Image 1 (cartoon, rainbow, N blue to C red):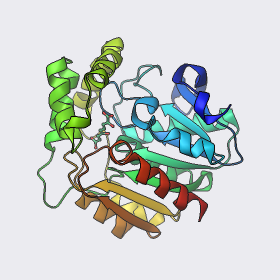
Image 2 (cartoon, rainbow, N blue to C red):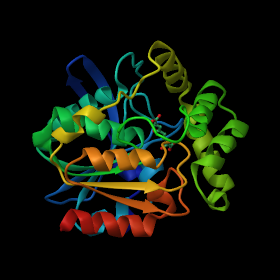
Image 3 (cartoon, rainbow, N blue to C red):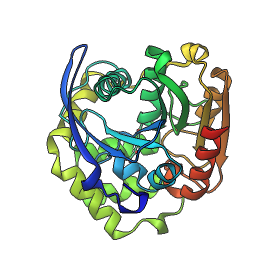
Length: 287
Ligand SMILES: O=C(O)/C=C/C(=O)/C=C/C=C(\O)C(=O)O
């Protein structure tokens, strides 16, 4: 398949996984072919999916010869619903292990966005032999911000949108999500709204999970030194969901990390600065 002809529909796949306590059908997109595979893990916003989060980042990797797997985490998009009472980072990590086992992939590079970055760290701690290089954007659970009160305004707005999924709440959330709100189109809002309203069970389960356990993403800062993988940290200076100084904490904790901070950038660096981000990722993966 050439990079220019792939679509969400043509790359859509389902798989049944059994991994520990998990027995689930997962949805993923499988794009391109190559000796090396890059997995992309999306964030925790309502209506998020691998495709929604990374649609600007797939083609350059596929063109460069990588196979790209976009996993929809349990409880998002077309994957099975789940109520998470423990660590959602570890739940996602188990789902990823189940998927890699079925696909017979021994070792992958992982790009994680926000919750996806928290989950990448959980996966790396549990499966060090299965990881190549890591790219963490706006997440990774390096501990609380030293400067910004928690929960942050963005995380509060995500909660409000989960509880009341209206176009008004979506727009409020998206207005602090990116730095330049003029890049947000009505079409993007509508697609996101359709996605999230299509799975009210996922919305209800997220609210239930957060009530059962408000700490869905435990702090891994005391274990970061165990991760020996080369890691690229990417942050937006104006990230109002997971503040930029969290990236500094990760930089201090991860022995082989480097940090890139984009100016004029919110929580969606891979989308707001897609071209530069894509070049940086390719350079990082190949050197
Ligand atoms: O609560 C956290 O630490 C993580 C929050 C997120 O993962 C938020 C991500 C939002 C998106 O990526 C989205 O597309 O809505």
